[in-house]
Every structure is written in structure tokens, then in C-alpha cells.
Amino acid sequence: MDAQESRREAVRASSTSVAARVRAESKPLSIFGQQNLVVQKKPKGITTYFKIGGEINLTKGQVEMFAYVFDPDLLPSEHIVKIGGTFATRQELFCLSKDHTITAKIMELWARKCTWDQRIITLKTIWCLPPSFSVDVFQHLQIEELIDKYADYMEKYPSLEYIYIPIQDNDHWYLMVMSLEPKIIFHLDSNLPHERKEPRTESTNTLAVVLSQIISSAHFEIH
Image (cartoon, rainbow, N blue to C red; front, top):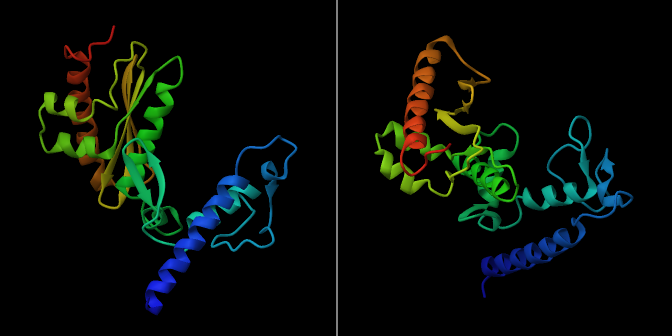
């Protein structure tokens, strides 16, 4: 075994042991446990790559978890998150750090998490669609194709009230929210230059038309 391979094995071993410790120590404890106390400075023995305290309130367990997830010395290709059929590696999660642009993979994980949350509650009121949905609509996929492709995200909820769709415009994300009753389209945008207002408004209107067709179809008619 050469030196490079030895280093890989050492990193794998370190990654495994740290992961086991983080999983064990980050589990929920009673409200009197230290893991649930917000820390204002770095706990001893933990190397972090972000500032502790200030407006970011983290518990000791959360600090340990983030220190592990964003450790640049651990394997970039390690699967850190899995929701449904979507994985995210350590390298892919680094886009959540400062001065990085959030990727479509993270938005897809968000959509899957919201969808999963809806399935386990009694009153199901929300669809959260991944960013690829808007891409497919703008590429003129047929209604039946969209229904087949995104069936996991669009279940028949009689109490459906809102539909969320993240939309990417170059390196910027904005959010469309469609309210079914009353019928209103919300365009939530943290940076809307005058020259982008019209095309983004056109995009949200196009998505609203397609979603209305999907909901009124025989497959998804909601009473």
C-alpha cells in the first residue's frame, strides 16, 4: 500500500469513527442535558470551520455535527444526507457555507424533506416541487409527462392549499408560491432587478397555468 492509499484509509477510518461519535452524541436528550444548551463559544476538543455564537445559536451537539459535515479533511464523496432517493455528499453540502451559491441538489433535498413531512402529518396542505419541475415546464414537457415524473411530489391531498416551486435564474434563486384558495400567485424574491421583473413574472405565470392544468386533470382533481 503506497503513501497516498494509506492516507485514504486513515481518512476513511477517521470519518467512520467521527460519524459514529457524532451520531451517538447528537441524539436528543432531556431539556436539562448539555446537548440542548446553546453554546456561545467553541467546545473544547472540537475543530470548527465557522464562527460560534452571535446570531447563530447552536447546541453542542449541533456544533459537533456541523464540524463533522464541513470538515475539509474528511472524504468529499461521503454520503452525508439521504432523503428518499436523493443523496448529498460532503462536497455537495459545502455550497451551504459562506459565499457559495446554493445548488439545485440542495433545493431538491428541501423539496423531498417537505414532501416527507407532509406524508407523516394528518392535515396535508402542501406540495413542494423540486427545481427540475420548472426546468421541465420551460422545456415544454407535456402534462402527462410531468405527472408521471413528479408523482412522488404531487399526491392527491383533498386539503391541498399551497404549492411551492424554487426557480433558478443564473446564480439566483426565487420562490413561487401558488395559493389555491384564494387563487393567488406569490413571487418571493430577495433580489429583483428591474430588467428581471418581467421574465420572472412570466415564468411564475407559466408555472401557475401548468399547475392548474395538472390539478384539474383526471389524475389530480381535488374537491
